[in-house]
Image (cartoon, each protein chain N blue to C red):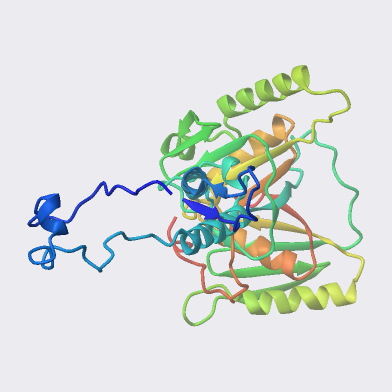
Length: 197
Length: 155
């Protein structure tokens, strides 16, 4: 068996080889009985890692890609919801209306208008519909879905204009994006601001 | 790192010591954990599907007219539930919240009387907040009226 050489040595006095072999003087300098090599037990760490990976894979969901969650928009909760699907997203924050990230108008501007629709939004939605129809796969039907991601404080006056514009552009299935939850508590999360306006 | 050492049978020249490299495995797990943590979605998203009730100018394919006229109006003071020609007002509770429990109760009664009926039209005043609208739609679905239409006619 090959002789093992120590790479890491304990600091301290190291006598010469001859002195170490000496019966008289070599006693105090003899090989220490205490093992200084530390072995990490990796098995338990790998177990923890594997469990973490399994848990995270179970939690993994692609729904997060469908909507861009932002601090500006506080979404409402609902207990009776369906799974969100890919569709054009209209975001309504207290300040502005955007379609797929593109600013359409400010809410103050829209609130002041007498029109039932938002012409720019309608136009952009029509363009999106045309684009979908030109690139769609064979047999794929245009369902007319649109997702509305609005802030809880947005008044119905704005919302109805957005809905009307979507309807005019051919998007008849309007989906309100919500957070799962709600629990069905009676009137616990309502009425904040309904008396304003 | 980790290894399995099989005692030699004496004389055999083939090496039977098995050495498993755990370091790349740990690296891979660490990378997977980092990736999954970064892409994790901790909030579950959903949708509530509504249709827009015809407002006259719409060119949409209007659904067939229901036999029962069931309308719910959200005003700033109360819910107004219209079942056929009968109108019921559900005022807010003493703490200023909408009485959704009573609304669900009324809607369930309607559903009991007309088991095949699935549609309801919701109208709201201009000042009603989106949260309140979503809550109302949610309660209608809870009561078994899944085809919810929202109309802008009132505003």
